Amino acid sequence: MATEPKTPEAALAEEPAVPSLVDHYFTCWYKADVKGKRCEDHCILQHCNRICVITLAGSHLVLQSGKAIKSISYQISTNCSRLQNKVSGNLSGYGAQFLRELAPLCKIYCSDGEEYTMSSCVRGQLMEVNESILHKPSILQEKPSTEGYSAVVLPKFEESKSITEGLLTQKQYDDVVVKRINATTATS
Image: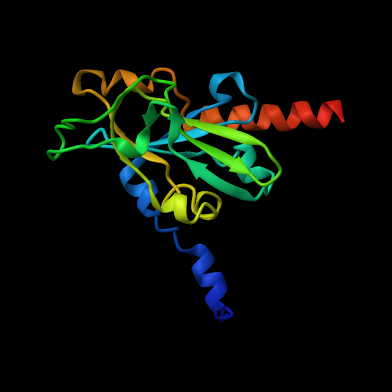
């Protein structure tokens, strides 16, 4: 008995998905409710060379609410601008600003007047800030885990294993998001 030929769509659906660049080279870690602020979640993409790329997590209010981002600023205080971070050397990080776990990286200003602060979430040297989000803030929403990252942080070698202790795995993060949804549903 002959079987029907598969449509191209059906054949593609059966093929295993090719992992994205992020999925292939990075381990995703999460910090939920950063500084106690509900739904202000961050994603830390950790490369095997210990470099960490800081992004917004998919459940962050800026991504979920569809708010328009008016601007982004790396001016943290009167005396501190992340744009003035000057690093020399390959991975030595000479001259880099040292960040504590919850050090502010940048501020996100929305058109509705709301303001959000992205934090480093890991201790280490600030290797790079993403200046392209200053010129096109919408990248933060359109491509949060690739072109929309806020900064690159290099943890100290001796701390590279312990930096993830206060962070959530993908499964733990998914559980937090589900609990929030269930709590919201139960109260409405």
